[in-house]
Length: 367
Image 1 (cartoon, helix red, strand yellow):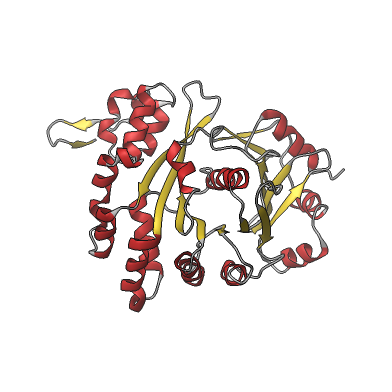
Image 2 (image 1 turned 30 degrees about the vertical axis):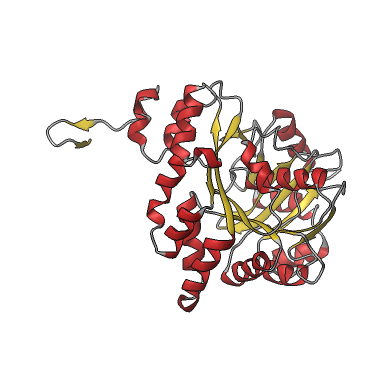
């Protein structure tokens, strides 16, 4: 058994989402969003590098020695699958292990709104799941793939960096390909996938202009494209895509988004009231005629008003969803306050007064 497995086993026993290993500090666990050290000595550079190299392939060692980061999947000998990032920093080597549950979750288990399962019924177009790092985008997409796998007969090609949840084929044929192992880039993976008779293409991250353009082409030519972006709202997602492509393609990109972007799901993870777990809170955009027009006429700043009034279509604004969850006592109001856009609406629910800025009565400005 690799020596690093002992830390991973401890992390799993504590129910953590991530295990952090870095030089000069003890190993740390992320529990319900908070980073906590374990009772262990500070790790030295030589010690930690020995632990990490023990689980690397020859090719991975060569890459690390050349100064490059590593992203890969690792299965501990005593069970447990992890997404791993290994990197170098000023004080030496570092590594983060993200636990990947063995069972693929369902949309019901994640308590996703019913509209999310309807996104899986589309036959073509683009559906994006967005949010900052660690907000559960991969888990939501895995649940959507699982829903397709159980309800439709499709050929699904999933491009990931690295492969996290492993999907056994049920009704669908699911082909999972890993960046760096099976394809050289997401753009290359999408280009190849379009020659492999796909019904659904999952793109792990729309991280550059070439990947975005290839994904757009796939969505326009009769495929359902699922993907992620590191954006924190529906409007920012649309603006990011438009800004990512060359200026001469701006009008073409807006036309694509107005017609082929089916939905944007933005999520954050908020602590539950007892602090023992976290719950996904979503902002949901469902494209309709009004939103399409806003995209083509550069009026995306008006989209939040559509989300607020589009409940019948399954739309919801982040602040709306946060307030509803606080009222239903499903999430911690202090944690929700940190993620709210219009924080003034949330101040009455906050229990930690240190979070709320005091007012200078003479100027009316925060003190």
